[in-house]
Amino acid sequence: IEALVAEGDTVVARLAYTGTHRGELFGIAATGRRIAYAGVAIFRFGGGKIADGWVLGDTLGLLRQLGSERIPPVRG
Image (cartoon, rainbow, N blue to C red):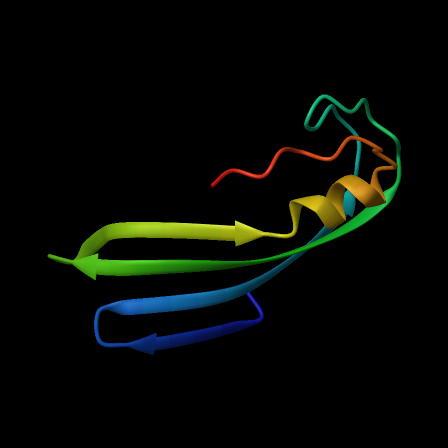
């Protein structure tokens, strides 16, 4: 977690992950490549629990780091 911002019942986290691709991911066999992945998670709390959550990440950037030429379809 690189940053947290809270206002009212909502918390936003800016996330960064690094690692080594050692197992199948999105149908891509392990490459041994080092990867970095960035994302944002947004949570709304109610009754002392997470009531809603959304997670967004740079999946296309991750696929490119793994050498994938496959571009996932855009969902609308």
